[in-house]
Image (tube, rainbow, N blue to C red; front, side, top):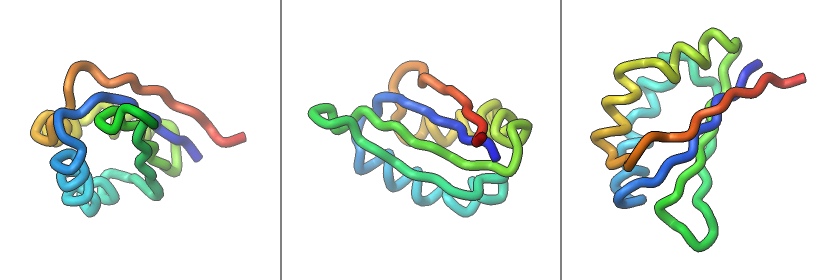
Amino acid sequence: MATLFVRHDVADFDRWKKAYDDFDEERRGMGVTGDGVYRTDGAPNNVTAYHEFDSMDAAKAFAGSPRLREVMSEAGVEGEPTIWFAARV
């Protein structure tokens, strides 16, 4: 199992969350098996999300997806996100 973590600022959390929720079915079709969203205390437009996958290859393919970048841009992600991967041991 592999987990992708992403942290980024968004212009408006409610707008971003709607786009995130609307992308759920498509995200699952791209291999996401579990996910979660967190907001930074004191900085409500700073978001950290995680996405679980069956393999590291699937996680990296998702992270590199042009469709993901398109949705993030439309959702109001500001700047370049910080992305990291972890494997369950």
